Length: 275
Picture 1 (tube, rainbow, N blue to C red):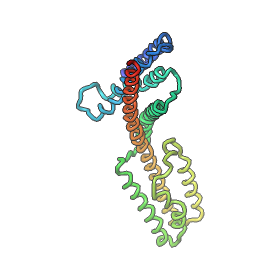
Picture 2 (cartoon, one colour):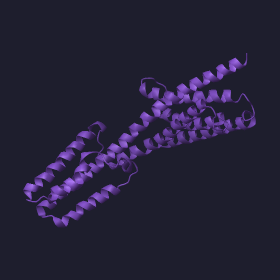
Picture 3 (cartoon, one colour):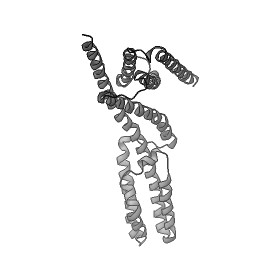
Picture 4 (cartoon, rainbow, N blue to C red):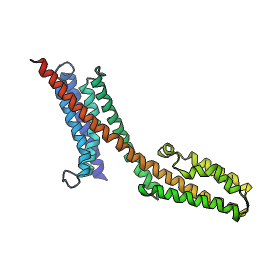
C-alpha cells in the first residue's frame, strides 16, 4: 500500500515538474518565437506515441518491459501531460484550418474518453466486487434467459395452482417486459436503484388482492426480480468497461495517423517555402 501511494505521489510530482518546466519554456521563449511549434510538436508526438504503445504492451505480455502496473501509471500521468503539452503547442488558440480543427477534435475525443476510462476503470471494478455474485460476461444472456423462463413458468403455473389469473395478469402487464431484456443501463452505471424500488413497490401493492397460494408465487417472482436487477447491474457495468475501449482505441490510432500527416504537411510546406 505504501509503495503504491509513493509511486502515485512521485508520478504527481513529476507531472507537476514537467508542467512547470514546459510552462517556463513557453512563457520565456515559445510564446513569441516562430519556431516554437517544432520542438513542442515533436515532444507532443513522442508523448502520444508512448501512450499508444501501452495498448501494444498489453497485447505482448511476454516482453519484459516494466510491469503492467508501471505502464498504467505512466500512461495516466503522461496522458494528463499530453493535454498540457497540446495546449502549449497550439499556444492556447483554436485552430483555423479544417485539417487542424479535425486534429484538435480527435485529440479532444481521445483525451476525454481516456479520462472517462480512468474513472470507469477505478470505480466500476470496485462496485462489481462490492455487489458480489459476479457473472461472466459471456454467460449473462444465458442467465437472463433462465430467469425469464422461471418467472414465466411461475406466472403461468399460478393460474392452475391458485385457480386465479391475478398473478399471471400482473406478470403480463408489468414483469414480462422487465424479464425479456436488459433494463436501465444508464441508471445502473450511475448506481440508481429507483426503478427497482418502484417495481418492488408495485409487487407489494398486489398483496391485498392475492390468496395464500398466490402470495407464495409472488414472493418467488419478487426474488427473481431482484436477481434480474443484479444481472442487469452486472451487464451495464461490464459493458461500459468494454465499450469505452472500443471507443478510445480506434480514435487513438486515428489521431496518430492524422498527427503523422500533420507532421509531413508542416515539414513539406516548410521545405517548399525555404526554396
